[in-house]
Figure 1 (spheres, rainbow, N blue to C red):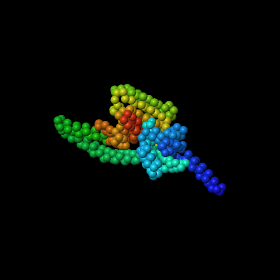
Figure 2: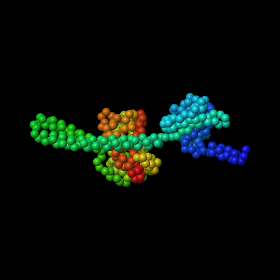
Figure 3: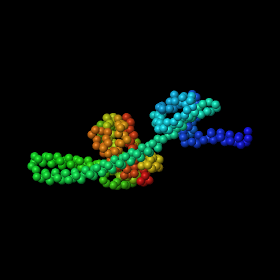
Figure 4: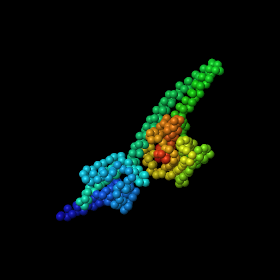
Length: 361
């Protein structure tokens, strides 16, 4: 064998061994018994376990729930026909969920068939795409509602004025009808004003966010007929932020009050703050921000309204107007922040992200 052939063989072997360790894609190699015989560093990060702990472990002991079952893998070993799945949700035994694209192919090592699994995590891309779509839909719904509200408000003023003039010409018994017209016109005007949202610009000041959280905590403590358990979990390292104290307080109170209405005695609400890094706010990557969380262990928010929760006129309660959370969303946007929610039975978490600086504007 020539020197060139020997060098080429060594070079090929070197890259075959080195490249998987440099790949961003997670690579898992299974033997004929579907046990793990190799994972690259990206797979170690994805699985939150080292190769030494994963080595010889059956793949079914790594994932609690996945569509890539043993039957499909055995068929791959038998036929050699590769397959791929996109947008696959995998659940681990610690109930952690990830969304990935999976490619499974057959490879040969030491004259024996093996399975090569490639995992590309797409949670972040999906989240950014979903948030951008929801933001666009929320803005469209808000603008439509505001346009309708303006069209309704002017005739309401004329209707109320006409009823007041007519009231001057009627006897006492007939005035009951004009009083009803005026009362309902005022009620609709109040609703329209709420649909139009906050009409004052925020008064921004540099201050401590825990002042607001603590005020909300004390207010709920003073008026807590259901005996809801209130807890605080603050991060004292959060620096002072620029925000409007009244508007942020209104946002947190609205969310807490919504939770209280669906909770029972003994349920729990936790007010939590953390300094968070590398968060996406309005499509931009923010290095540092304050994360304010309102967490409860109530029944959760119905699945069918979670994607439209912050739209105007969407409510999970029969008696709700569906304006509270829409107003909260507007108030948080005035701070160049982000309001989001994750909910399942027994766990609901509203998160407010506020940038440390004005970089999200």
